[in-house]
Length: 233
Image (cartoon, rainbow, N blue to C red; front, top):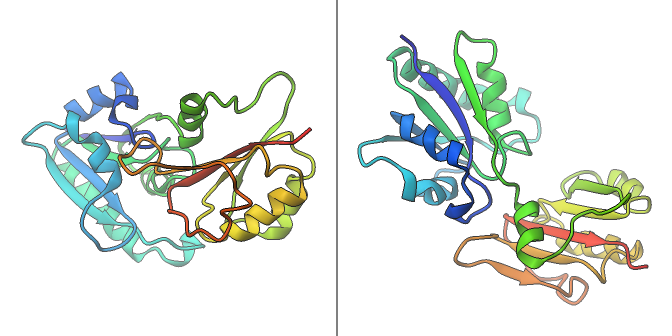
Protein backbone atom coordinates (compact mmCIF):
# COMPACT_ATOMS: atom_id res chain seq x y z
CA UNK A 1 0.00 0.00 0.00
CA UNK A 2 1.38 3.40 -0.99
CA UNK A 3 2.02 6.10 1.52
CA UNK A 4 0.30 9.48 1.70
CA UNK A 5 2.01 12.71 0.66
CA UNK A 6 1.33 15.60 3.03
CA UNK A 7 2.08 19.21 2.09
CA UNK A 8 2.25 21.09 5.38
CA UNK A 9 2.33 24.85 5.91
CA UNK A 10 4.29 25.61 9.09
CA UNK A 11 3.50 29.33 9.21
CA UNK A 12 5.98 32.22 9.34
CA UNK A 13 8.17 31.30 12.31
CA UNK A 14 6.46 30.79 15.65
CA UNK A 15 5.99 27.02 16.27
CA UNK A 16 2.83 27.77 18.25
CA UNK A 17 1.16 28.99 15.04
CA UNK A 18 1.09 25.51 13.52
CA UNK A 19 -2.43 24.13 13.24
CA UNK A 20 -3.60 21.03 15.07
CA UNK A 21 -4.11 19.38 11.68
CA UNK A 22 -0.51 20.13 10.68
CA UNK A 23 0.81 18.59 13.88
CA UNK A 24 -1.34 15.48 13.46
CA UNK A 25 -0.12 15.05 9.89
CA UNK A 26 3.49 15.22 11.04
CA UNK A 27 2.71 12.56 13.64
CA UNK A 28 1.55 10.28 10.80
CA UNK A 29 4.65 10.90 8.70
CA UNK A 30 7.48 8.38 8.40
CA UNK A 31 9.66 10.71 6.33
CA UNK A 32 9.92 14.46 6.42
CA UNK A 33 11.13 16.45 3.41
CA UNK A 34 12.98 19.59 4.50
CA UNK A 35 13.31 21.92 1.50
CA UNK A 36 16.32 24.16 0.96
CA UNK A 37 16.98 26.71 -1.76
CA UNK A 38 20.73 26.24 -1.71
CA UNK A 39 23.24 23.72 -0.47
CA UNK A 40 23.77 24.73 3.13
CA UNK A 41 22.93 23.21 6.47
CA UNK A 42 19.58 23.73 8.08
CA UNK A 43 16.03 24.46 7.03
CA UNK A 44 13.88 27.23 8.52
CA UNK A 45 10.70 25.20 7.99
CA UNK A 46 12.26 22.23 9.77
CA UNK A 47 13.37 24.33 12.75
CA UNK A 48 9.81 25.65 13.15
CA UNK A 49 8.32 22.14 13.09
CA UNK A 50 11.02 20.60 15.31
CA UNK A 51 9.04 20.62 18.60
CA UNK A 52 6.40 18.37 17.07
CA UNK A 53 8.52 15.77 15.25
CA UNK A 54 8.73 12.13 16.27
CA UNK A 55 12.17 11.13 17.52
CA UNK A 56 12.51 8.38 14.93
CA UNK A 57 11.29 10.34 11.88
CA UNK A 58 13.53 10.15 8.83
CA UNK A 59 14.57 13.60 7.60
CA UNK A 60 15.45 14.06 3.93
CA UNK A 61 16.89 17.37 2.76
CA UNK A 62 16.08 18.31 -0.82
CA UNK A 63 17.59 21.28 -2.63
CA UNK A 64 15.14 23.24 -4.77
CA UNK A 65 16.89 25.77 -7.01
CA UNK A 66 15.38 29.25 -7.13
CA UNK A 67 14.73 29.91 -10.81
CA UNK A 68 12.67 32.52 -12.64
CA UNK A 69 11.16 29.93 -14.95
CA UNK A 70 10.49 26.53 -13.38
CA UNK A 71 10.03 24.88 -16.79
CA UNK A 72 13.55 25.80 -17.85
CA UNK A 73 15.30 24.06 -14.95
CA UNK A 74 13.61 20.77 -14.19
CA UNK A 75 16.49 18.33 -13.57
CA UNK A 76 16.76 18.87 -9.81
CA UNK A 77 12.99 18.93 -9.49
CA UNK A 78 12.63 15.62 -11.33
CA UNK A 79 15.25 14.02 -9.08
CA UNK A 80 13.35 15.20 -6.01
CA UNK A 81 10.10 13.90 -7.47
CA UNK A 82 11.64 10.48 -8.09
CA UNK A 83 12.94 10.32 -4.53
CA UNK A 84 9.52 11.21 -3.10
CA UNK A 85 7.72 8.67 -5.30
CA UNK A 86 10.17 5.94 -4.28
CA UNK A 87 9.49 6.62 -0.59
CA UNK A 88 5.73 6.54 -1.18
CA UNK A 89 6.07 3.24 -3.10
CA UNK A 90 7.73 1.80 0.00
CA UNK A 91 4.51 2.55 1.88
CA UNK A 92 5.95 5.46 3.81
CA UNK A 93 3.95 8.58 4.57
CA UNK A 94 5.92 11.60 3.41
CA UNK A 95 5.49 15.13 4.77
CA UNK A 96 6.78 18.14 2.85
CA UNK A 97 7.25 21.23 5.01
CA UNK A 98 6.91 24.74 3.66
CA UNK A 99 6.97 28.19 5.21
CA UNK A 100 3.68 30.07 5.44
CA UNK A 101 0.90 28.50 3.42
CA UNK A 102 1.55 25.72 0.87
CA UNK A 103 -0.50 27.40 -1.87
CA UNK A 104 0.88 30.92 -1.41
CA UNK A 105 4.16 31.78 -3.19
CA UNK A 106 5.48 28.41 -2.10
CA UNK A 107 8.02 25.88 -3.37
CA UNK A 108 5.37 23.29 -2.57
CA UNK A 109 3.24 24.46 -5.49
CA UNK A 110 5.85 23.16 -7.95
CA UNK A 111 6.16 19.88 -6.06
CA UNK A 112 2.38 19.52 -6.05
CA UNK A 113 2.27 20.06 -9.81
CA UNK A 114 4.88 17.35 -10.29
CA UNK A 115 2.89 14.85 -8.22
CA UNK A 116 -0.76 15.73 -8.89
CA UNK A 117 -1.00 13.53 -12.00
CA UNK A 118 0.74 10.56 -10.38
CA UNK A 119 -1.09 7.74 -8.61
CA UNK A 120 -0.54 9.37 -5.23
CA UNK A 121 -2.82 10.52 -2.43
CA UNK A 122 -2.02 14.14 -1.61
CA UNK A 123 -3.25 16.04 1.42
CA UNK A 124 -2.41 19.74 1.54
CA UNK A 125 -2.67 21.41 4.94
CA UNK A 126 -2.83 25.23 5.08
CA UNK A 127 -0.60 27.41 7.19
CA UNK A 128 -0.62 31.02 8.38
CA UNK A 129 1.02 33.45 5.91
CA UNK A 130 3.53 35.92 7.34
CA UNK A 131 1.38 38.96 6.60
CA UNK A 132 -1.52 37.55 8.65
CA UNK A 133 0.79 36.86 11.59
CA UNK A 134 2.30 40.35 11.32
CA UNK A 135 -1.10 42.04 11.23
CA UNK A 136 -2.28 40.20 14.34
CA UNK A 137 0.97 40.68 16.21
CA UNK A 138 1.10 44.44 15.59
CA UNK A 139 -2.62 45.14 15.81
CA UNK A 140 -2.47 46.31 12.21
CA UNK A 141 -5.68 45.58 10.26
CA UNK A 142 -4.69 44.29 6.84
CA UNK A 143 -8.00 45.30 5.27
CA UNK A 144 -11.34 46.48 6.60
CA UNK A 145 -14.74 47.62 5.38
CA UNK A 146 -14.80 47.99 1.59
CA UNK A 147 -11.06 48.57 1.25
CA UNK A 148 -9.18 46.67 -1.43
CA UNK A 149 -5.90 45.00 -0.53
CA UNK A 150 -3.29 44.05 -3.12
CA UNK A 151 -0.74 41.33 -2.44
CA UNK A 152 2.34 42.20 -4.44
CA UNK A 153 5.55 40.23 -4.96
CA UNK A 154 8.25 42.90 -5.06
CA UNK A 155 10.09 40.74 -7.58
CA UNK A 156 7.45 41.61 -10.18
CA UNK A 157 8.36 44.14 -12.85
CA UNK A 158 8.40 47.81 -11.74
CA UNK A 159 5.90 48.55 -14.50
CA UNK A 160 3.44 46.02 -13.12
CA UNK A 161 3.81 47.26 -9.54
CA UNK A 162 3.43 50.87 -10.72
CA UNK A 163 -0.01 50.03 -12.10
CA UNK A 164 -1.24 48.53 -8.84
CA UNK A 165 -0.01 50.96 -6.17
CA UNK A 166 -1.95 54.04 -7.35
CA UNK A 167 -5.30 52.23 -7.24
CA UNK A 168 -5.11 50.00 -4.17
CA UNK A 169 -6.24 51.03 -0.69
CA UNK A 170 -3.94 48.72 1.24
CA UNK A 171 -1.01 46.59 0.17
CA UNK A 172 1.05 43.63 1.27
CA UNK A 173 4.48 43.51 -0.33
CA UNK A 174 6.46 40.30 -0.17
CA UNK A 175 9.94 39.32 -1.37
CA UNK A 176 11.23 42.87 -0.85
CA UNK A 177 14.80 41.74 -0.14
CA UNK A 178 16.12 42.30 -3.67
CA UNK A 179 14.91 45.84 -4.40
CA UNK A 180 13.92 47.38 -1.08
CA UNK A 181 15.18 50.93 -1.95
CA UNK A 182 13.11 51.01 -5.15
CA UNK A 183 10.04 49.66 -3.36
CA UNK A 184 10.41 52.29 -0.62
CA UNK A 185 10.53 55.03 -3.27
CA UNK A 186 7.45 53.67 -5.02
CA UNK A 187 5.53 53.60 -1.74
CA UNK A 188 6.50 57.20 -1.07
CA UNK A 189 5.37 58.29 -4.53
CA UNK A 190 1.96 56.72 -3.94
CA UNK A 191 1.27 57.98 -0.38
CA UNK A 192 1.80 54.48 0.97
CA UNK A 193 5.04 54.94 2.92
CA UNK A 194 4.02 56.80 6.07
CA UNK A 195 1.78 54.02 7.37
CA UNK A 196 4.02 51.21 6.18
CA UNK A 197 5.66 48.71 8.51
CA UNK A 198 8.11 45.97 7.57
CA UNK A 199 8.79 42.87 9.62
CA UNK A 200 11.63 40.49 8.87
CA UNK A 201 11.70 36.86 10.06
CA UNK A 202 8.35 37.14 11.80
CA UNK A 203 8.03 34.84 14.81
CA UNK A 204 11.70 33.80 14.77
CA UNK A 205 14.17 34.72 17.54
CA UNK A 206 15.86 37.40 15.42
CA UNK A 207 12.66 39.08 14.24
CA UNK A 208 13.10 42.74 13.25
CA UNK A 209 10.59 45.55 12.75
CA UNK A 210 11.07 48.75 10.73
CA UNK A 211 8.46 51.51 10.93
CA UNK A 212 10.17 54.32 9.03
CA UNK A 213 10.52 52.75 5.59
CA UNK A 214 11.74 55.96 3.95
CA UNK A 215 14.54 56.56 6.45
CA UNK A 216 15.71 52.93 6.33
CA UNK A 217 15.44 52.33 2.61
CA UNK A 218 19.18 51.68 2.13
CA UNK A 219 19.14 48.91 4.72
CA UNK A 220 19.91 45.41 3.54
CA UNK A 221 16.84 43.38 4.42
CA UNK A 222 16.41 39.68 5.07
CA UNK A 223 14.87 37.34 2.51
CA UNK A 224 11.92 36.72 4.87
CA UNK A 225 10.68 40.33 4.94
CA UNK A 226 7.11 41.56 4.43
CA UNK A 227 5.65 45.07 4.28
CA UNK A 228 2.12 45.99 5.32
CA UNK A 229 0.85 49.40 4.32
CA UNK A 230 -2.24 51.52 3.76
CA UNK A 231 -2.78 54.77 1.96
CA UNK A 232 -2.05 57.96 3.91
CA UNK A 233 -5.36 59.82 3.77
